[in-house]
Image (cartoon, rainbow, N blue to C red; front, top):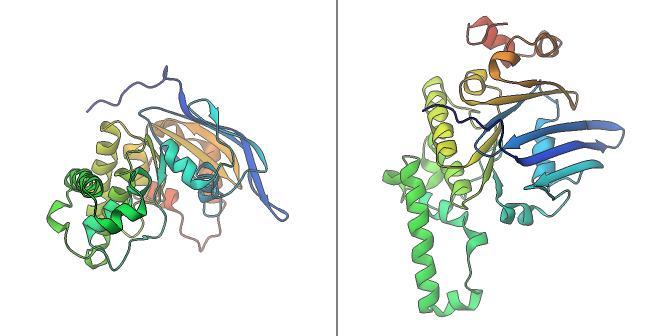
Length: 279
């Protein structure tokens, strides 16, 4: 499917010179970029560049010490994480956080907790309204499981699945909340080559369903194959932004990755050496 042209679309999410410090460490420094409806945007950089910190500021886990975050033009800087989620922004995490004593379906239904209208006492009394809403939650969760090819394992314990399938369960739990924007924090971490290739298709399918995507990822074969735009940061500052074909040959980007310690494996340079990315 052809990538949609979003160049004239108003920004969905805007980061305007946001920054944060931890003690004397400037973790993110005056970072600005925009995400438009329907885009897949990659946020990359060497280890310790501040990528996850940026995600934590967008989702309200950290409050920026300066700058503004706007969602549909409205300032959401520093609001509580549950209010960010209610506004339509959901995320996954670097490490899988599934409920080990719950099935795949139960894990995904748990992602709908902000949509629940019934009160706790209605659940205790098992009222008709509560049963009706529970049926609606299960129907939506089942539809998402089918979308991510997980329907056949819906009643298996989530943590008993292979690692790649557990990643998809976590993504399903995020998607069932019907977000406008999903933030994926290293979704290919721990996946083999075949699973990473399948992940590309999953991310494209998410975008094609109308959901905008931001991802942090070290697997350059994923980043270069699925993103429409890439933002590169190093030591908390933006050093480049553009299309994948522009980023792969940007000298500042190559220098940032080459500047790491010799004994630290670098994902971009590994991709260059393996022919996945052309310097």
